[in-house]
Image 1 (spheres, rainbow, N blue to C red):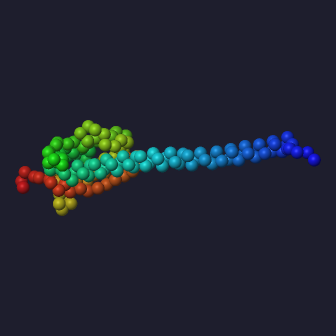
Image 2: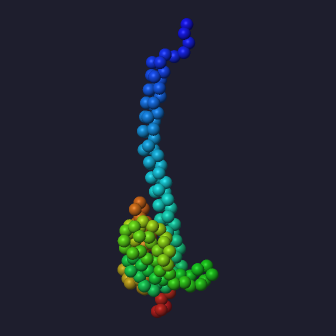
Image 3: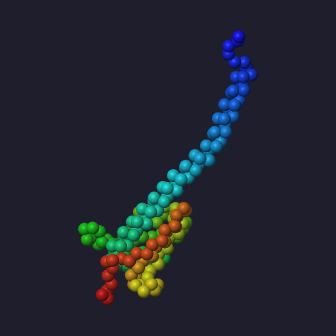
Length: 158
């Protein structure tokens, strides 16, 4: 009785193992691409959420809006030590440019950023007369909208 494998048996096993390895590799490529895309989306979402939360905190402690447009706002901000700082939040209007707070990027790849200003009845007013600030931030993968009523806002007539 002979022991061992014939050359044909060895070649058949190698062909089967090669076929299984190729099939497994081909099926794993979309999984790896999907994982990379999920990581990229999660990073983009996290940056956008952090920027949106930061803007929300800034607007909540606003004491006076100096000026504002649909893409930028200048206001006075009160820090925890009750010191006032003049701040500027702006976006150039060019897709892909970052949203900036005092020149420092908050988030990149901004597709659209809009600010709208309302009085207490919901009517649209100039930024200096607003009681509510609505902001909408859209990046390549995310869209956020929020209305904030600054609690410390002061007006010269009050």
